[in-house]
Length: 369
Ligand SMILES: *Cc1c(COP(=O)(O)O)cnc(C)c1O
Image (cartoon, helix red, strand yellow):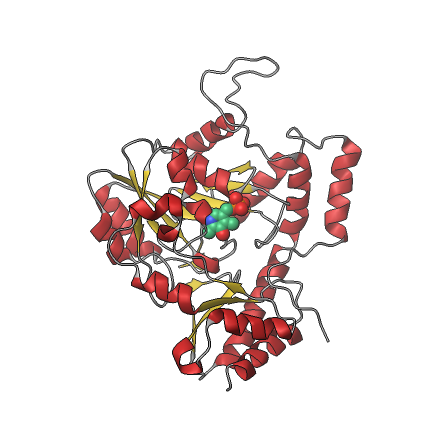
């Protein structure tokens, strides 16, 4: 049999080579040639003017908000289901998150709900391409344009995902990526901000380097941050980046296998893509008719675990976390339904196609189909 992996990183001799080159050069910290090389290659791939590397996806979102001047008294619209790291940076900036429900089919922020949440205090929308699935960006950019709002794309799960011919993370004012160990590519831990605004990118580069005015020397005209990526991390990133196409096509193959096995199965509903959108399928995700199959998601997960198949629950709606309870308003029916009935299935590129097929067929057996 084969081992099955949920979201484990895929590392090879290439990563070892790059890391050794960084060690041999003695550039392991934040100065080093791999950092600008990684940023330049990333910008070229995305076809944007500028990319700035940082320590995490969370730091990328924090810097995007900070650079756009989001602060006390401002409201930022976000979807109710996402990883908490989408939302915490809003609070770091002293602004107020405004949670809206997601669409039942795509699981992404519902543009109609965005419209209903806009007030005179709204400054920005953070959209999340959940599990790699692109949001309805045309509609969102139109709404944002009409109200003079910034759009920050949380593309931490959607590197390589395409919306109408453009990569996610390149459509809004700022795009944020993550290189945590379980994302599409990893640097061990890291992030990137992509933008077509060169001036803002230069300023972020300055901010994340302690806002240091001169080098060598110690003059700081602003409060800065220590959010720089290290040369070791960039070394790993460059190796992983060379393998991005391999990873993305594997994810597309896994998506096809899951879709083929689940085709026509009434109790399984796939996370749907918008027209002209291709999800990176970072984590292949489904909704199960738990009433009909008479099993809860944790029960199904236990049965999968018996077969050594890992799985993951959907993010809990953020409005149910103690720091965010006070921001709960309106209804989040779709978010709760996706949380109650949703499941992330094994999607690591370490998997073999046979392992994915075994997973899909095992799930049908567990559901009594
Ligand atoms: C991973 C993730 C982040 C944060 O990225 P880190 O690199 O872990 O800080 C933010 N938002 C979402 C949706 C994520 O999945």
